[in-house]
Length: 199
Image (cartoon, rainbow, N blue to C red; front, top):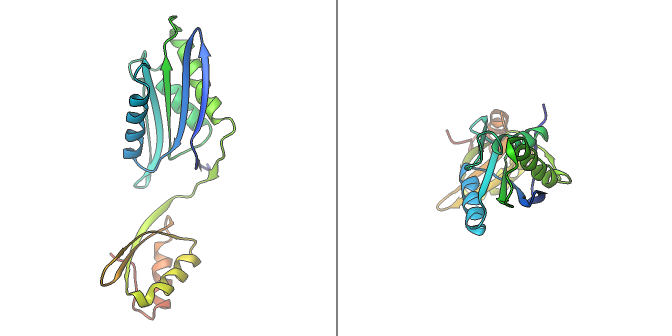
């Protein structure tokens, strides 16, 4: 199965019997990002009766899923939000649905429909990118070897995501998962045995 990621925030809205459901779809890279966004929405909507949410996050080699009803009847909001994310095969994504109560109860079937419809509205025209599992490796090298590191990273379609500069440079590099062995071998050869991935 192919998974997809998103790069931008998308919004959607659904209304039923006076209640308003505002859905916000976010790309996330960590559990901390999910938590920060959740707190931001709760702070930005103090009069909302619920901020329900769900996420799918690939981390440490496994896919983690989570959902929250945030006080709504059990199974009425978190599951339809998560199911919408799963239906679109999206990962590294969190969805938050802010509900303002309209005075009439919707019942569990009505809530399931409302939360799902709000998320589907947000996902309707969202741009999705094919996802590949990645991993991080670290290489410590002298300034004189920066060009070699750049060449090897480029050959493996990697990306330098962080560098710490001191007496030497420590580069953190993102690679396709499982590509570290060939990367390390090519780096060692290209640098005449002077560079390798840190163990």
